[in-house]
Image (cartoon, rainbow over all chains, first blue to last red; front, top):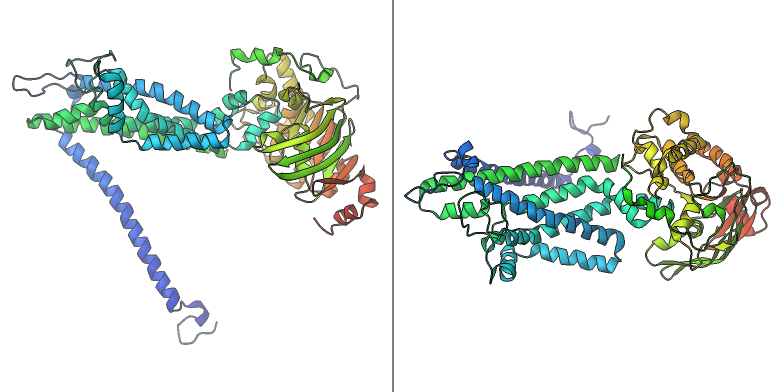
Length: 300
Length: 286
């Protein structure tokens, strides 16, 4: 191998000035993007760690399992059991409304509708997704609460309106990922469209559909604004299971506890936040697991 | 395994509209084929993708119990012709077809014809094997029957028979419940063929069935086609001229959406009448 000086590589193999500059830019971009990733993860870690530290004084089994008890000085010496139960019921009702409708809308747009109708519906869903949740809350307030009173149904409906576009759009994406060759195979066997959707397309997409639904649930689990006007004035301090009254729920409880003057209430607010974060984290992990399963199946 | 649902019966008992030939009556038991098969005749078939005129006045007679190959360069319309036969063409948005496609004497585009009945009588095998990923080998082959309402021991027999008839039985008999997608490419394609024959069609359309497979699997598919023609009428689209020469009784050469020549395979490849056919089969273009 020729070399121009002792030890230096051949001229063809060294980097010219241009290439050296590009190499430097490349290194710079690597550093910058790594730093951004670190910042993002750090923010998440900061939030979680602060909540855990501030919640520590108040979080215990009693907190989760007992109802609020207001001491003579107006401090909550009990727990948030009623809010936990109330939230679960509200989320459950909202999901029972939003998931079936969302998936059916997605099936309609991907399997049956013409492309113009389909695009319009997609657009409408995207806009609905972007409506500020306080507006949704005011809307449901105006229709269901004004002239009547707050109720779990109103709160659940407001949450369902927020959840619907999330479930529907992600279901659309998943159904579109199902290869068209499977639908063709079904058609060529002389099967009817609904049969093909029900027995071939949906089972193939089910993992992704579950993922989308769980993400929808995770999103509304912490929504406060829709509940602010529809289910925020609780008439009792015990566990309520009747949705025709306003139901206690975690986000509103966090809000009211934070506004209180007593520091014990503040600690409880942090503890409630921790409960909420853990709930959402659990849902997200579940969603990821189903996502992995469905990806493996589609690849298979 | 997906359990059959209770509501399936309605599709089985729906009366069949104007196509009356025995083959379309799903209740009729099928004894060994007497060899009197069903031919397909295309009369002045035109097909469009939106405003694009893909197939122009195509008239072809596909004889019963024979293999007819469609050859020609890419874009010549071969696949479109075949998709018009089982009315898959119109599933594409904006696509339409005009003309007549006769199964024996019945026009499959007739006004009272049930499109799903057409596709049960005229089956199709695609270029890329497409077994249903959520179903086992057995369920895949049974899909055409089960999802149309059939069930019970009779169905199991038909499924086993279909798997045997494509030469897959020995390879899968111990794992009928394992996923259909776990098979090799060639096995998957034979699985798809088994799925098609389980429905007991009269005609099988094959759109380049071996082009995605290795040479050994291709040979197995060709042997299978040779056996299948005893019981079915077969139309095969192929890019592979040697394959057409090996497998087909007669061959149709198409160019730019028109039929240029249709004759015995031997004649097409050794002594074609049209100059364009000759240039194609000798490899001067396409």
